[in-house]
Length: 389
Image 1 (spheres, rainbow, N blue to C red):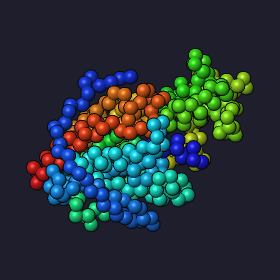
Image 2: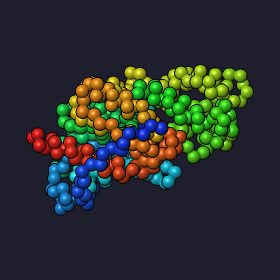
Image 3: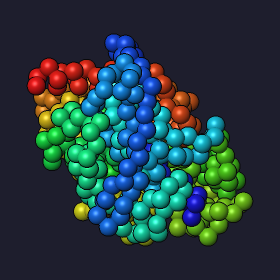
């Protein structure tokens, strides 16, 4: 169960841009203050925290503009604590500290049914849904009225992965959300996104070195190797569930039509990918949360109704929501005349961290330079709001 949870926590998980994003104007840095609070999500009380500049620092006594961080798929604590190849990471804690030091009150919270890093109520998997998580995020925004450090006239939402669809939903339903940062956005249809995990990441990772197919040996090397979370999740679709967690997993007999112990990439994998997807999106599957009728529209589907500035942070080696997703979303927003900025970030993955390839995309600390640039984008939008008041 723990390995499945670890694999599923990606969601909520090469073409470089012609030039890197322009450097933002230098934003003063202040020490930060941490203030825990609790938020009633309706039947579940979650721990939360606001991190803000020290009132004696460079950003004055506040209140400060708000950035709400919204998690991706999985039972995430407020820090998004994950184990990676370089040790544990706390992505949202890193983002919160970087933004708070540069003048923002940054709010994060445990997802519904989550008690802390790696600890959650069993109801999480039974009762999760993106519409419920969107209502929860809205309740967190409402709770900020009780926090005098938060300037609710300048509220931004930073969504990651699954959280980008939630952030977009908040922006279309509320008048008090004044801008979005969408990190690894859900720009493609949910089913197309999962298809990419299987065919574009999992298949090359699990295949023999010559690309001729998937065998028990190549599958074992993949599932026990150094690939990232999406690579291992994609590879797991090719395993016989009865042996998937053993040292020698067999290939799925449902895919191995001729029984030769090797899955042909075309006739036995690609030819059966829709069957794999049908199961994955069924009630017994591991992405039922994104089944039709159960989930929020993608960011691209919501583009026409987003009226606030949008910054899209898209790693070129993002295995979870690929580069094309960011481009499709930007095109949709600009087609509707929206204020949209896409930063294609060379060599970075789903967590804005270094990734040598989509196969290597895993849990590592986010690139500090990107966070500084994003803080500059937010500061410019916040200043524009102040000037307009």
